[in-house]
Image (cartoon, rainbow, N blue to C red; front, side, top):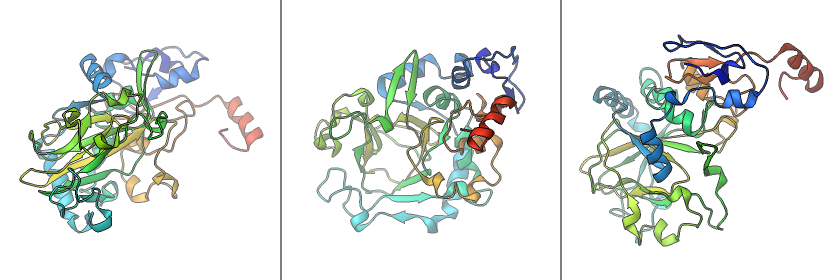
Length: 350
């Protein structure tokens, strides 16, 4: 159900509206507020998960994908095994003497480009962009009009594979605020400048290694000491959650995080997606002539909305509906304003 605030700019839902949805009389003011807060609190995160995220800088969303759905991810990856790149030699992520080095030989394996694979292999990866279980977290933590910021990456660790030094965090090495990754709480809302999903395709048992995070570090006002980044001391503060295939760890990049060497018996697979607010950009993949045409071909309207370049929601930005089933269109800008912008800027938008 759409909130009155969004109705003020004459919103219309392209997909079937949720039960009981109604549109209120449009009012001609507060365009910014209406476009940035179009949905009701009931359509967002639970109070339980808000507390955990604000306290720890991450939350685990369990059972997002079923065993059958996870199997489709694996089938697609296996069909593109030839495109996997292992980090060897100078591309390794750890020094030989590091506690994160693993067996010292086996490197991390990376794979990308799956949003543009031929069907049916691309489809599982695209569902993450507007999944009904995940959209509430994106709307509450990044905001309506959220956009895919980085090219998603599949990380694989064979038994003995190295980890990755802890990175991200709220503070730069010079002690200044790391605002491109920043986390803030203002006026009753959490906001992340860069939000990540770790979509787990394999089980991780306690002690296996893999994804690791320093709870609460998104609020730190001091830089992370190098010895902690290298996992040389204070290791009791590094938390490696036990997860099942199909679980998604939602975390702000302002929370210092890394990867422990893999001790599991089989290959670990984990996909990283990063999202930014409608007006923000960290990555620049979309600027190199736009996202590849193969990424956009055949996307649903909701998925395509997530691939938009950065600009404010009030400038006719289409946003994903709260349940991910479709999109919400704002009312077109008033004709007299468009005509004026065309006269002044020779364009529909300033």
